[in-house]
Amino acid sequence: MDSPAVELIDLVKRYGGATAVDGLSMRAAAGAVTAVLGPNGAGKTSTIEICEGFRRADSGTVRVLGEPPATPALRPRVGVMLQAGGVPPAMRCAEWLRLVSRFHAHPLDPPALLARLGLAEHARTPFRRLSGGQQQRLSLAAAVIGRPELVFLDEPTAGLDPQARHACWDLVGELRAAGVSVVLTTHHMDEAERLADQVVIIDRGRVVAEGSPASLTGAERQLRFRARPGLALEELLNALPVGSVAKESPAGHYIIEGQVDPGLLATVTAWCAAEGVTADDLRIERRTLEDVFLELTGRELR
Ligand SMILES: Nc1ncnc2c1ncn2[C@@H]1O[C@H](COP(=O)(O)OP(=O)(O)OP(=O)(O)O)[C@@H](O)[C@H]1O
Image (tube, rainbow, N blue to C red; front, side, top):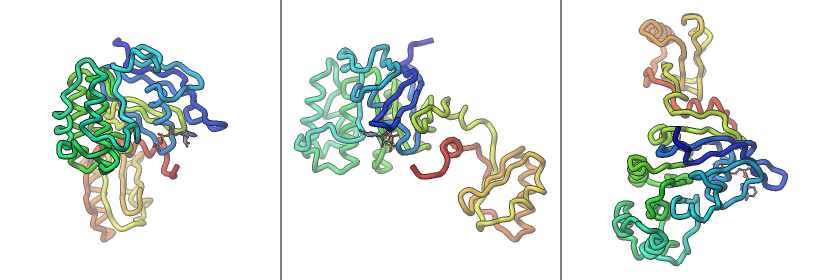
């Protein structure tokens, strides 16, 4: 097996008395996109910033491209996009990218990269005058300009408009195609499903699930529909085969799990008709990563 791009064993990070990362172990495969998911405060940024060498672990083993994280030789090999900051406020876009490019032996062309991320017309704009989404894009450009072997992207599409989000996804796809290892965090489950080869879900500083999006969501299908809230699901369940599950989550959104076949579909629609209920958006689909995420991490706010 190829050596992983990132390997963490029993990682622990404490802030005062609070344990943010609590014995976390994971591997990010080389040449793959690994998405680290978790609720607010789960420990994602702490973990990523330890890998980037910006924070120190209290205990555990961290290997980044086979090296301890703060090893100077890693700097040209690893690209980093922070959640915020890192760029001097008065620095103009093009100037910053040119400066960062000088730290690398074979950088991408700064003007071409600016154009690629829709920042060409802001080349002379100081960082502090960029919008939040434009600042994000400049940080993304700086992370990849050195043609790194491994890139850490902490919430790369947070606050981006749909066009910029797609540009970011395209860039991640190209990095992957070029054999670059990508480790990213995101709160967008659709983004993880679309981009990631491997998903690691963490909660309260520990890994609660990992695998490919398809292995996490499974092959089972569900029947979903929308209708007025509060339907008598116990009655519907009586009409369904034993072992079926019917739930309302959130209010007015219904999910039927079990042997989803023509018989089940007919039973549900007949029951709805008898109840005088129109089942809107009736569809059969696989569980989404968001379903799995909520099942594993719960619904309470963090
Ligand atoms: N510098 C710090 N000092 C004290 N506590 C911190 C510090 N950084 C993070 N924490 C705490 O550690 C926990 C994990 O934070 P972290 O930023 O790693 O989570 P996260 O999963 O990245 O969250 P989010 O999705 O909100 O970005 C949180 O409870 C947070 O309040």
